[in-house]
Length: 400
Image 1 (cartoon, helix red, strand yellow):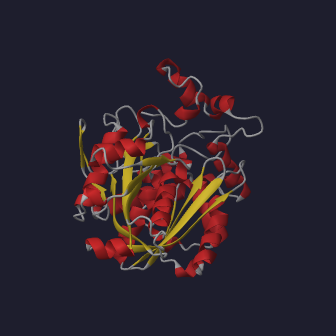
Image 2 (cartoon, rainbow, N blue to C red; image 1 turned 90 degrees about the vertical axis):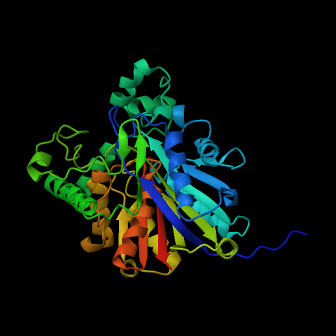
Image 3 (tube, one colour; image 1 turned 45 degrees about the vertical axis):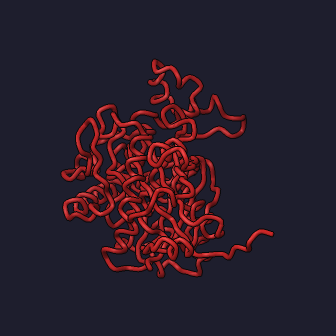
């Protein structure tokens, strides 16, 4: 007869991320294989807390474009590279919510008592594996890469089952701006402030604890590459609409295409006792929903109240919010509907300034959230991401 397992709490022992590099051919991580990037990060993550790699029972890696250099179960490849052949690993894909999903799975596994210590995180090299490459019928031929970048959903839909075709997320951003009556000026002002907050956080050293400097062929990368400290409202307003001739969504008020990695070490009560680990935060609740596939990115508006109810909290019980800045319109619509105070929202900037490496952002948000809760000596935080195709995932953590 199997030993009965009791449900346990899940804890964050440590969290770490790389700086985020521009997802271009000359970007900071453009010469670094994503498996190399992920393995460097996870090795340092457990070294920082003196955990023996033999104690790691699984490695769960989010990746939104699991093909090419990110194919063949990149989670296992990263685990092998970091810790050797005996360490298992797997890859999960919930598009923009992939590493938030990896974290949730890790928490569920250790809470069950069947596992004690799991590494969760994400990796994405958008410079080496372009967004949507896994859906392109001719992506294997590099001569066709221009089609991937210019035709977008029109090409993706060639692979989709009839009735499940998608529209451009940029168009969804436009529809959200229209529905919530968000002006171009509002979007650009929000984006300007994202850069300013991120620049201030960088110059003040707020990110230093969470960023692992990485040596690459392009030099040591230790600062987020997309932040524009000298950005001006005038420059942002001069940008042309990116998705619609008379639209309000531009490159300036959209998230940046980016490379990076992030990881979180998750443990249960048994691991704390057996390995002498000191937790930094406790997993409280998570929730995931499906949403309108046309508006597509409005899921945070519905998932946040649900995860709050699950935890027995209200908006006022949350000290800091990280709402992924896929587009400025997404965050502003969410803020309007949920009445999130400015002083609690994306206090160090977000993906508009830092970048949005798709499979990484869920874990990156949690790592940034935890560090800022600690810096401010606050207790509770909530992270939420909209997801392409119409989903959203939210997570609540609490310092211990």
